[in-house]
Length: 78
Image 1 (tube, helix red, strand yellow):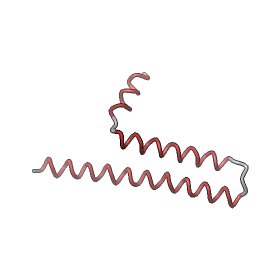
Image 2 (image 1 turned 60 degrees about the vertical axis):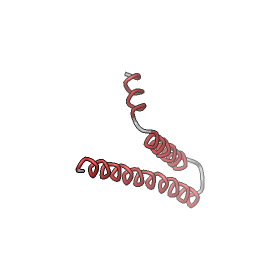
Image 3 (image 1 turned 90 degrees about the vertical axis):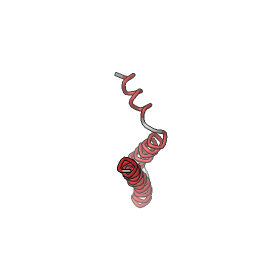
Image 4 (image 1 turned 30 degrees about the vertical axis):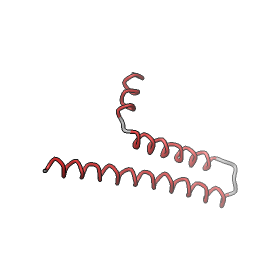
């Protein structure tokens, strides 16, 4: 099972792997910050910023995927 998972990850292009890794990193940090013993205001600011980074990465990844699909479609139509 782990070899098929490794093969699947290896087939994903480098940009996508980096984006997923950064999303996991910032999402994990967001969860850690939410459970940390910080003050309420500090915790809210840190969690909001980290969640914003995670969401921004996700949206930019979706835009990149749509652009690549549109380019592939236009090349296939020609």
